[in-house]
Image (cartoon, rainbow over all chains, first blue to last red):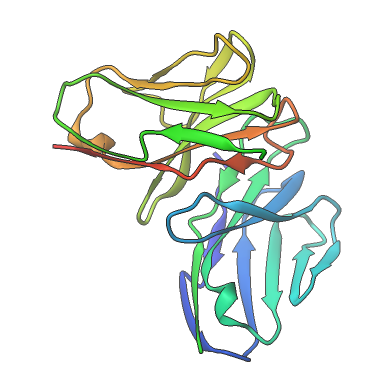
Length: 112
Length: 114
């Protein structure tokens, strides 16, 4: 079973600060997704990256897929209280996989 | 509104009393899946279905059953629940036949087994 390790596990920052969350594995993934989960709700997809070295931006969020497709990062610029939530990365070992491997998540709190 | 609906949202039951958690999606999705989410363990897949009448085990299938008789419904059955099945359960669906497309999750069903 391929594993995805996320770090840090918990992060508490002040509004306006920048932060980076990491998702690492020793295995290669065909694609990697990032989800955000708010309390009492199911995860919601933020982005999918499929090409090594790919960078995608979603407003203040920047996602990067490692060149070797073994790791990914999520960078948030000028964090806002609305960014608070659990951030999950999920990887597919190959194209057409029926199963995703989820990381355990990074719980982010942005304090006003 | 496109959505995945789970019922019940909350349930407290006792050991051994059979229960079913229903899941329905209105997006005509091929792929559906069940996950459980536990502190420190993250999201783990229980079962998934690629199409009607086609299901397969995920990483933690013991103690669970599923069926996919209709495209829109994918119920999760606990024949004889035990306390270690206390968890937060999520149903998800995707327009692709695999897990690599966007997964749409339900709001979750919190189950407590006493």
